[in-house]
Image (cartoon, rainbow over all chains, first blue to last red; front, side, top):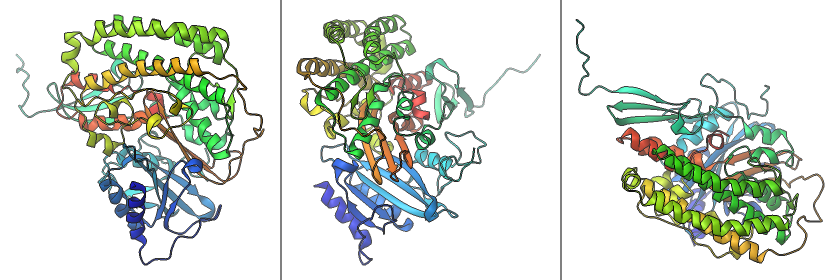
Length: 162
Length: 372
């Protein structure tokens, strides 16, 4: 049930734009909502949004009662992009795992913070900033969390040399 | 004659708890702004045992990464290795023999009891009672001996393999496990009489450190912390994996939201784990413990895979982004205590420091698991 309503709500963000392509293996996909086979992937909905749609998408999930699972990044160095992945899930038995992703250029890695919506995003965003150097605009305290306090390196970038 | 020391009525001071402090059970630091005995504001500082496990996940093959998983949570390591092998098996489409899954469930639950036992002892010690820790460790010792006999390790297990197990359990293990269940049930009664009913213990916990269900949701708290706040959420029930649907067990939920609720959830969970172990031993099918069709070098198909499991501390998630190689392109570990501890800063505002330390104990922290 919640799966359909969430899918519709997220789909509404893309009203009027080009529908999502079928996510070919290995190639970057367009923005849009995809349903995934839970048995294989472990989640139900996979939405790739533009950076300016992120807060709207997260707000939809917040209002629908999802809890925040984690935030992380992926460095797609060949495409010169960084991806930020947000995981959401539910406490009730209407199981629905939602993944929100957004892609940003590597040389200007800025996304808005969602810690204003989910307070628990605070540490996850700091951690993602540690590992990838992604800046979360509006974050209240974006200083190293897991790395040393004077760390100026981002170890999960693919061009990181120890 | 020096002037007497006087504080302005509104003056606060900064108190450093940790990084080396017995109440934090590891190297965790909390900066607290104090107004006398009351906490005005707290800021948790992590990362003292950060080892960049996620980078190692990119540098090592999936099989080479297996031992890393048991070095996150040293008290309940099997749950984490279970998550890893399930994630790989899900992505690679490997079938696991039923006997192997049953043994996995039995050993994970034994490990959960061991973890809760140690937490119980340490938690009561935080509150000033020393002897329960000795009883708890005595019981836990039986589990560690059993697991040592089959896995070869006492804490840092590397027992599960993609597609099965590396070693079958023998009759000695089954006998020992069967003997352990009534022994542990007796102990649980003893703990209830010794600790749970103790008036000082109750006064330290009841109504203290309320964590609302809404706060749990905003911070992503899971496991006994969420279940102590009235949230009926257990990955074993909500997203059934392995052979858990075969077992008849309950998920203890308490609605008081206080430290006592979190304590009771874990104490009840031990009994439920014993029920699972009991049923697992009874139903344990014969057959192989390793699939025959397992490829030698595991390569996952291109894609993004997620697996969640219920560990002793809550929902542990592992995300593998694969580009088709024998290493993960990106491997993310979602640790439950990381989210559970995060709400501490907000929840402890205005609390007495002794209550806050009891609250911290009720979150069941394992620092290496938080820092990864």
